[in-house]
Image (cartoon, rainbow, N blue to C red; front, top):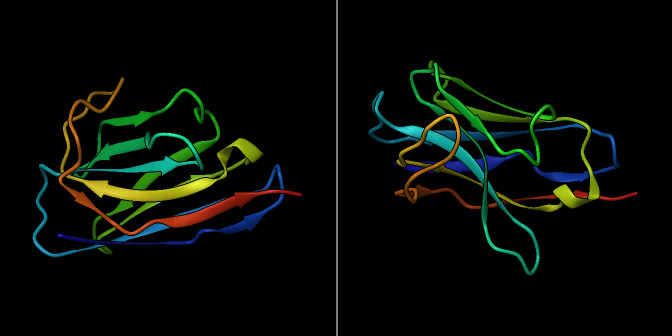
Length: 123
């Protein structure tokens, strides 16, 4: 499984960005997909996740109400729509796959990682 993230950039506070993660290789409906981020000097944290066949999603409290995860099965792509961005959202964002999850949290480490895409929120 290969994951290719894109869509990062520089945005003003209050702005929006949509990240995309193109998935290739053998993936099946049991794979969960998600987004993580790592800010300078901080640990990597989970941001949002969903089951590949839909129905279950997780969103971190820090972004709840502002970020939305979705996927397009036909295009083999996972999206992270980020609204009302704040300076504290500045980080490298990574897409990942192959972990266990509940609606409340991710319960195992991802098996697959994409390269990061930098999101900078600054005026």
